[in-house]
Length: 310
Image (cartoon, rainbow, N blue to C red; front, side):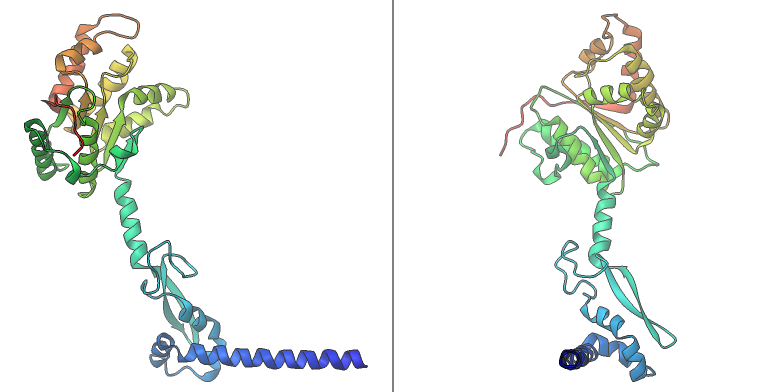
């Protein structure tokens, strides 16, 4: 009998402690200012109703309301990260409805903005390029900044403006200019695709194997602003020149969708490059057709002086 009596005493003692703990928690929850605000709007709730809904009220008390206890989205303390609770009453029962908080809304907007810039094989420095860090230390650079500012100011989907064909030697910051423009355009909800040309050629060839070539071509045909970085650096087959690049440029010329280019070649040099296939064939007429489209879509601007870090 002793073990039974001892067990009963332990159980009663434990039960008493549980009851005391419950009372303490109940008092703490019901005295919380945010919970009192809720209860003051629902004075019809009885003590029994409060006890039945105590866990919901406890959850509401513990939560950060309107991001007040959260430094940022990653630091959100709520059960559903990025969502703030709102109390709803259904008869005499309380339910919690979670809605996106301010931090979550801002984070979603930022991700939506970031998704507007599609970057294929471009380095991180280019993807994060900033207008305020763009050098204007020479007449050439001032002229380019003027051109891209005018493009950003006047371009919209119903008002076609030519892109730029920025040419010059390696190290002049041509790619960085494209990154700046793409990041500025996303502030206006304009989608861009920046493509490193040599890798683009390889990607499109590989797309034949998985039957995704046409889908990818349609995507690049229709993106708001298309940017080809380092055109002329690739080894281009006649098939790619005519069936891929030519088709994309033809469509964008017809639909008045701007294209930007960077290259180590000027127009004359690029035409010579396009006229020689990877098999060594010389096809000046077909190269001329591509150049005609490039000239319809962009205007050339030289950048000869190498970029200097300030």
